[in-house]
Image (cartoon, rainbow, N blue to C red; front, side, top):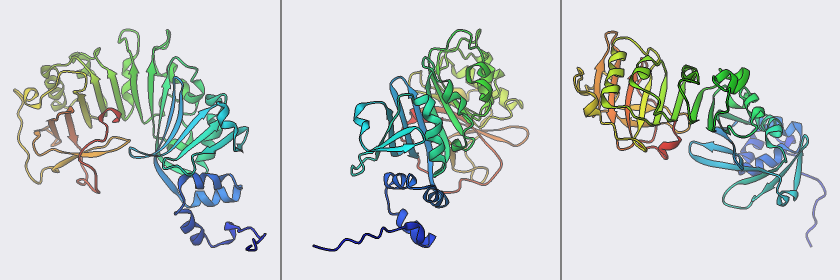
Length: 360
C-alpha cells in the first residue's frame, strides 16, 4: 500500500500567483467550499477578484433561490429551504447551516438550510460579499409575503449600488408611494420592475420614474397625457393601450426640449398590438441613416444582458440642440432611443436578446 503523508497541504503558504492559478481552475462550488476554511482563506479569495455579472435573489411565493449569473448564464443556483434533505453535510456560517449538494453534477447547485430566509439573508449576503464581486443585483419580492427584511437590504454592498427590484403581487391598502413601499431606502435603487397593478388615482406613480431603468408589465393606465408629462431615463412597457398617435405626441414633446433624461422608450409586442415605426413617424420630419452622424448599431444597455440592435433602418429626428433620436420597430418591440454624446459602441455585444421578457 502507498504511504499517505500526514502533512496537510497549506495553500496559504504558497505564493499568491500559484494559489490563484490553482483556484482559477476550480469550479465555483469548490471555491465556495474553501471560503469556509478560515478568515485568511476568505481574504485570499477576495483578493483574487472573482467577478460575476449579477446576484439574483428570488423571494416570491415558495421560490427562495439565489442565482450567480454571468449575463443569462446561471453559474450557481442556491436553494434556500428547511427541507430535511438539507440536514446532510452542514457547514456553519454564523447561525446558518450550509449544505453543498451536487458538487459532481454538470449544474452547480447549493442548498442553504434555513427556516427563515428573509431573516437569514443578511448573513448569506455578508459571507458572499467577503468572497466575490458582483456588477449589480436583482431581487424579486412577492408583495403578499413578509418581505421587510429584504427591503432593508437594498443598500447592501454586495449589490454595488446597482440593485434592480422586481415587485409582484397585490399592493396592500395604504401603500400609496415608493417611500411607504420600500421604507427609507426607496431612492437607492438602480431600477424597478413593476409587476403589480397600479391605480394612478391612489398611487404616486411619478415616484417610479426617479430610477435609471423602469419596466412596467401592466401599463394600461398610462395615457398619452401622462406619457407626455413623464421624465424618465429608460422605460419598458409590456401591456399598454397606446396608439401610434400617442407615441408621436411623446416624440414631438421630446423634440420641443422636454424629457431631458430620456435614453430609451420601449413598447413590447408580447401582449399588445404591434407598434410600427412607419405609423409613428407620420407627420414628423425624419431622415434616414447617414454614416458618420451616429453609429450603425444602438446599444440596448439592459442591465442583465445588453445587446446591440441594427439601427440603420431606423428613422432619425434631430432636436434643435443637435441631439439625435431614432424610431425603430422589430418583431419584439417598438423603440424610441436617444443618442447621447460619447464614443460609438466599444466591445463585442450580441445582436439578439436571449429572453426579451427579462430585459430592463
